[in-house]
Length: 420
Ligand SMILES: *Cc1c(COP(=O)(O)O)cnc(C)c1O
Figure (tube, rainbow, N blue to C red):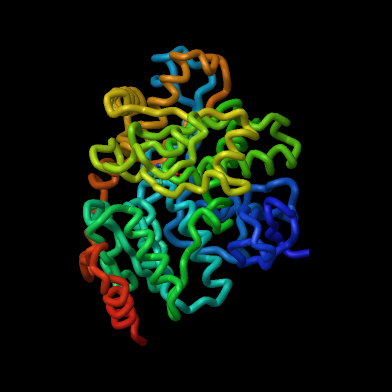
């Protein structure tokens, strides 16, 4: 048997390992099943410690970090929480946290690029991102030399920095428009000859990479937690946490109860909250002006994988989960309190999860004695900027989403840049 197989979440049939969709066209995510039913931590750098449950056959040694799970004292004390664990994703040398792009998007990027190499795909990889994903993929591609075409909303361009001096493997296009415009352009470009899409939530490498947050937490606590808090945009991290939990239940050593997912978005730009709470999957009426004025626009996604089989709705149902809508004031308060008590800066997106935890205590959805994992999806950027020089990646071109020639211009630019 191979190290892993890939199956349709609906019919269970085995698919081509590299496939992104069921051969029977089911509207379902594909999912991996691993040969090793019990995970054994490997003596490998960063995320590759979880090699047994990652859909790869080799690794990228350089530049990888993993989640650091630790028991909170100061922040926990504020709320009399006796078993609060922080799953920290970012840079924090005092805690050995060395995710150098400072968010958990690193966990998606490394396995995804590794798998692309295993597929012997020589095409230009196309990634659309509001910033954090772009940074993570740029980092891995600078290490491996994988040509990368990045499409980023113009207003998020400030997030595209790197520690690498040489960024010749990255073609950065800024898009005048929102994240959805960037995604749409990216998907059109990626369908052309010479380009390849990384697959987003459909890619098992991305999800199993993000799932390592739950693996790290469970291995640290030596049990599955009762609750898992995370700020979501697409919700992919929530799906991944659920999938990792199912594997840990199968493993047999961590308990039998799936952790309850507590997923949070920033209101009013919160389509997942609307769909879950109001059971409303109608086109985005409320979110017309989004992501304007959001606490962190990385959390806005117009087309999250909600109703697809194995998607966010199924993850919430299976875990008896909850969605939280968090306003900017609560987020700012939560961010301040967390940073003061734990002593590390966190991304605004992560503050949405902190606020959700506070809210869940207020409404009595959790008990202060429960075992809780709080995913700090990004942190330590300020800390990193004290220790390192960061380089802004200079855009190769700016296009307007309204320009009918935009797609052609991008193709031309990237093809020229990576001509060998
Ligand atoms: C992307 C991102 C999220 C949301 O991730 P999902 O893919 O929706 O699970 C949360 N926090 C940070 C810092 C992010 O970059």
